[in-house]
Image 1 (tube, rainbow over the protein chains, first blue to last red):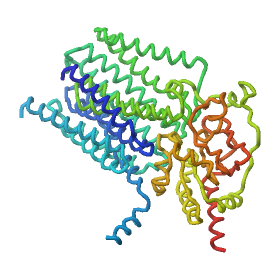
Image 2 (image 1 turned 180 degrees about the vertical axis):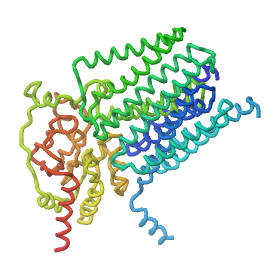
Image 3 (image 1 turned 90 degrees about the vertical axis):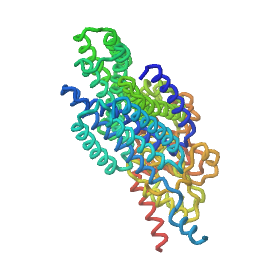
Image 4 (image 1 turned 45 degrees about the horizontal axis):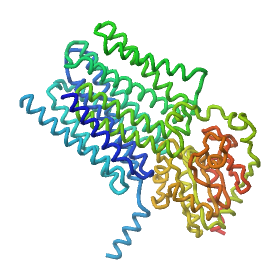
Length: 105
Length: 478
């Protein structure tokens, strides 16, 4: 891919990142950080290409496999930890609220 | 399927993944949609991985599968066994793995070019981006590992400063840049290998020494910064291998991390340079009067028993609970919620006041209280609670220190002067739960503890609160 195109994409993504996060309530800072941490595991794409190249060099294979493992830990750990955190962020007494909803309907 | 068709297919998949990453990140920023947002971003990752497996460069799947399986098992184990109180170190460690993975991608590309299997179209550009990937990835990795060790208390959380530290760090950075420049412009294979090794090693050292002088209280900022760096490392790796989805996703993480870091710094009224280089809290004696007599604090610590705490709380109608890192350490969040419920049954209105940098991770307290089933609506942000503070009968400070230190508002000589705090001192009575008489992570004397309306409830927060709760229960029983 053309370098200029990559820089173009880079700049736009940068602005988008700023815009997306600028007004997030502080309660969500941790899950947000943990969730974006999982996204940084996207480096797994590069790792897969390195590990699967099979260019006869053991160095690339070893490095690639290590990178796939590490990036996968980042991805899987990141998404599941974030989900675990978010699953705990509940509204007041969901059970009784549901009951109330049920009674009124 | 020929190469051109598959390239179009893969790139289309990358576009879909990028859109879903953006959508997921946006949804993560709102309470109602956060969980779905995380799922969508996970789907985006899956699409990106599957698309990459179809890449015509990928011809050997054995080692990929080994790596994917090993990573999945370890990642799942981490995610399920980590305690909520250990969340900051978990996030730091995962972040470090991401940084190291990016570094390795850069290194693998270096060896492929060296081995002659890849011929870069623009050698200088590729070398420069490999250098950046290794530099950022290396700093992220060792910095995160060091942060992990500090948070897990394997290493001292105190900032470590030594004579000439800034000079040593500057020289390290200079050497790293120098090695990088020689690496980029030199064509000699021997020099390439030496400089490559040199800056790889130096970046790893640099990450370590960068986090060294940062105190425990500044951890939320540094965790957020390292998170941003891990994204930028992935982004740099994207430039190395000419991959757009890496550039987009990495850049999103990088810039959103920068924003979060800026918010954290603002909440402490300090600049990032100050956080990184001041060695905040390294010398507790300095603020306790060493710079002059202005910092002397009048008053004494007045302890209170669990029985007396009960008496105070029993009569209270407006109670605010201010949690800090101490609550996380003693894992008192469940007992705190129990106390809040008892107080409410007793007719009091209970609120939780959350300071943006309380704890060791941005929003750390929210996660812990959520784990203990404290309803979201009871959590009040600093700016919302401060005007109400004078109407509060009791403020219970649980293992929080700097975020309630009135010196930030009154003492112009204090290093934390100007930092926005929760004005606990304006409440009629303040009860501070604390393990001992020592200063907190920042090493600053807390003037709040010496005020006439403050009482100290010493001991482990969990035990102390259980004592108070049992007083309430024995009253109910009698």
